[in-house]
Length: 241
Image (cartoon, rainbow, N blue to C red; front, top):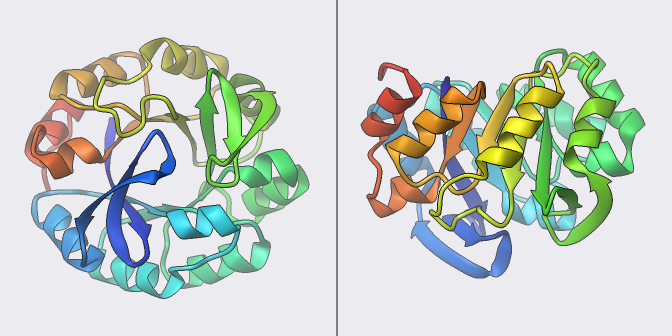
């Protein structure tokens, strides 16, 4: 299973939110590029980056910083947050971003999601962020009435790279992932599913892998020291580079 260390950006800093709440922020580093280098030096084979400011306003806010992070990483990076136009997707692709995570687009502009998937085959990731099974949009600030599993099924025949499935109630809480919801998503679609939210221990990662998930995103646990990157990689069945 692929392990994706997460770097969330806000105001040029590396932060983590609790349950997607912008008012409950912890800053874990003033230099995201240094964090990129640290993760890669410790064996990370890929990185998951989120422009939280971009997700909130619906357009890139930290594109220049993202480009520098991708250049410094030297490993594949996937990026989410504010990708709501073809032009934005193209610009990030040109900057070297390997995979693009789109979420709100799937709800508000499904035709654009299809266009992106066809123009960038196997490089678009459908981001489904759910609270009580229902999809949240616009940086988790608004709720839709659509169930995440139904949205996944609607787009499962597109040439998508994966689905990132986040349980908002678990995100940043270090209380373990929502395994039942994850199992439902994995069973519902043939696409690769990447789990996000709540991972605190190596056992959590092993449980995610046992459910058939293709990947696991880990954030706060790596920053607070409860889980080392080496432990996470071993639990995922990966060897450090």
